[in-house]
Image 1 (cartoon, one colour):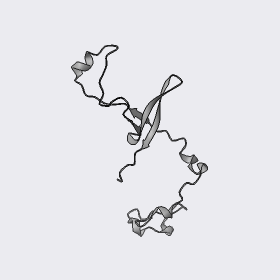
Image 2 (cartoon, one colour):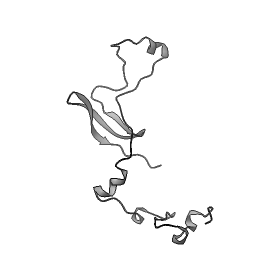
Image 3 (cartoon, one colour):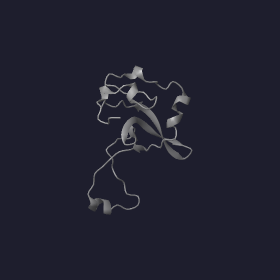
Length: 117
């Protein structure tokens, strides 16, 4: 099979299996969209990194070296302001810190819609 075919030159006869062929004019209606929990089972075991950013600050190394136990570092957020929730380094939501059984947790209050790439 010629590896240099353009995307729009591909057709069903150039594919060796029964997987869908992507075309320049393909749209969402050309693919099966998961409609139930069982349709998503293939992705359940994929690990993701979740981070909750309470706030940020900048300081010089000399200031960092002077910190002792109990030192307070001022962050760029105010009390009660939403924190950012990242999945695999992508901002996906905002939320609030909560305490659950003596542990910190997060309640999502807003889902962030990402801009199209």
